[in-house]
Length: 283
Picture 1 (cartoon, one colour):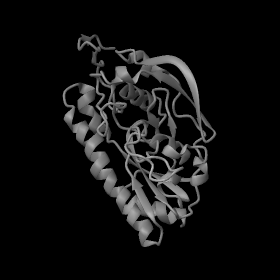
Picture 2 (picture 1 turned 180 degrees about the horizontal axis):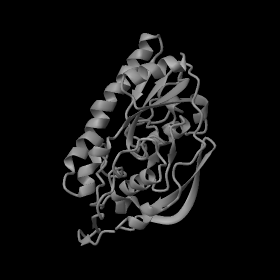
Picture 3 (picture 1 turned 135 degrees about the vertical axis):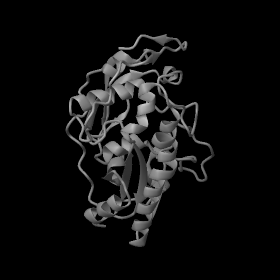
């Protein structure tokens, strides 16, 4: 399959981002999270992205409207809008004779919910770490705040995956850093959930500095975090939380991302609520 032909169709199908990784980039991943466990003949892992419009974050930034983000930035975007794009691209691959397995962004931390059907096979359900896959597909990096960043939209996107037996030229791993380690995300968190102490992770040769994050505190966040839609006991969605919105404001102000606007994102002092529910003075 020609990469340009695929990307041209993905653009027609309204994908904002598309990255391709060859399956050999996943060779060290354990069976419980490896694409080959789902589709042993897979040759390419395609990561599809749709932007979260900046306006979907506006109501949360102002502290006045949370529902529109929950729909247009989270649930509908994941389960309807992005899912349709992913399915259309899957159809395109299958119309060209290649099998295509679409996968949603279900948290890979969810434990198996079945028993192995054969000795040596992982238990169902095998779940892929979608942010890990997006790094391997050359779409960006995991920032200090633990949220995926792209050079196009910063933290503003959702991903799904297609596994295919089409052999497609992989994209290069992103070399340039998007996160500049300003650590404003940690400084502004009213729950103290983000530790400024650094740790290094490496994915497919790309090294990234991230924070130690207390996700149990994140679950108590009243500053724009949402419970995980698939598994409430798992990590919450933090793209609209104060930490990620602060990251977005910083990246835009410093022109670290491409999708910029006529007016700055943060126009007023931030609002903050601590873990007891008390309003604390904004910055």
